[in-house]
Amino acid sequence: MNYDTISYDLTDRVAVITLNRPKQLNAINTQMRAELAHALPKAPRDGARVVVLTGAGRAFCSGQDLGNQTDAANIDLERLLRDEYRPILDAISDCPVPTIAAVNGAAAGAGCNLALAADVVVAAHSAYFLQAFTRIGLMPDAGGTHVLPRGVGLAKAMGAALFADKISARDADAMGMIWEAVSDADFDRTWRARAATLADGPTLAYQKIKSALRSSFETDRNAQLDAEAQMQGQCGTTRDFQEGVTAFLEKRPAKFEGR
Image 1: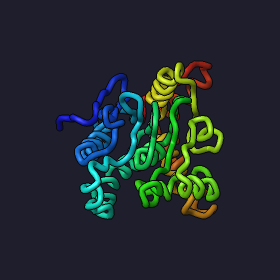
Image 2: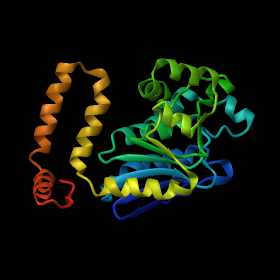
Image 3: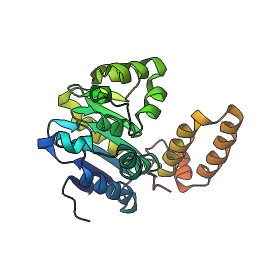
Image 4: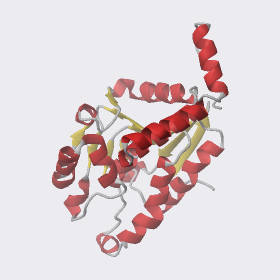
């Protein structure tokens, strides 16, 4: 598949998928949704051990491309969310390797929740997050009603959704919405270093971490302990575990193979 609204680069086991409609602040249109739905599951199959989602130009993503007012009024939002957005969100959530959203600028509406769907969010200080939906008479979608209360609690999630205020990267960091906010000067270096760390890490352990943490909100303590034991048992049979122990005893960095 040829990509026109995104770019796809795989280097050193890091797949970088860049939303690439900078003149439209990377607003998501039909073509971009189709390309993301293709590229996101493709990356691990290509050998990527981490997937990074970022934006071209001065925005990460300004959300759904509404086009002109007439087109916007005729959008079947229920179908759009089920058929075109959910495959993207599922591909991020179910990705067998870690995902990073490198938020370089504005992340608004569906663009905000696309970023928050990633396992780790690194944002530049100049970036901001905005649940813009009520400004046009809508409620948060693209997974926002799921990820927000789990990330920041009900009170903060409710305020963000109702008031549609801009939340700076620093504030998002402070309230636990994202992993970290860094200076614009350090942004590119930081997310690339984070990606390199994950690409060199124990892939199966990362996969189990993602599964265990994401499911923990729906399971009780006993079920979670059982799941931990089962998944840890699987991790304990890997070459990465053997290498990790050997490297620890030999006082050297581990060289994980991802299996």
